[in-house]
Amino acid sequence: MSTTSHRTERAGTGARRLAAVGLGTVLLLGAGALTAAAAPVTDPVGPGTSGTTAHGVTWSASDELRDAAGVVTNGFAVGRGEDAMLTFGETVDLTFDVVSLQSNGPSDTECLVLPAGSTPVQLSPMHVWNAASSTICAANNNAADDPAAANDATSQFRLDGVDSFSMSGSGTNTSRARWISNPRVTVDREEPPIPMVAPAFAVAGLVATGALAGVRRLRGLPR
Image (tube, rainbow, N blue to C red; front, side, top):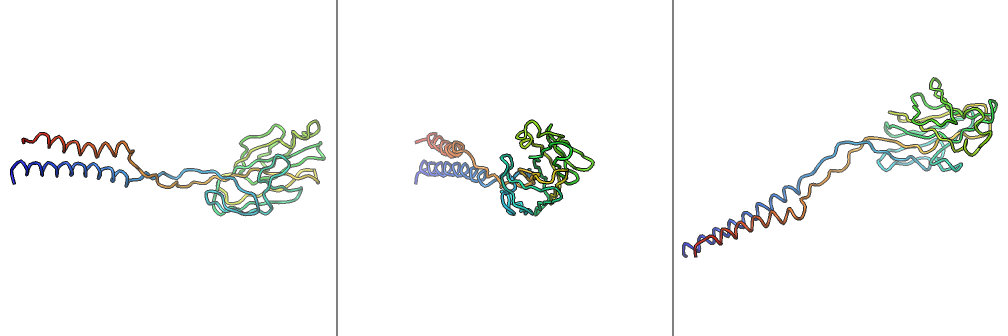
């Protein structure tokens, strides 16, 4: 075989090797992955008396969580002297709303006693919060002029690092319900790894670069 044939064969081999290197680089990129750190996620709790949130927090309630009163979402209620509880399968940060507290004067006022550590995030002007006793009440006579507005008035609370929540009905009213609404739990969760996939144009570019280099070497050989 002539010297020219040997050189042509070696050049073709080189081109194939360069193309293989490009493809190997792509495969190495594709094999990698980015691992996300744990991040907080928030899910609603309810409806029903037990369940599991979208991110795997199990929960149970002493009474059915349900929609009611036109303003309650996944809520439950107590009357004066009654208690209610939510229990979780792990430690969570809990956010919830207090709604439907009404007052028609000092002798007809609804209140709720919340767990110690409850912190108001947003307090309705129609509600009064006593941090020392963890008690929220309807502002005096808040339903006299507009009962619907008193019913809809919402205060939001946060309770961090707990595995249960309890509340007790208090105040001077003996007939109406006191509600919490829209309980949400926040926990830290790791998201699935994110694959590192090289874009299609990068794959084509790497392979083409190797092939083109081989062609140029072939063209530069003497005939």
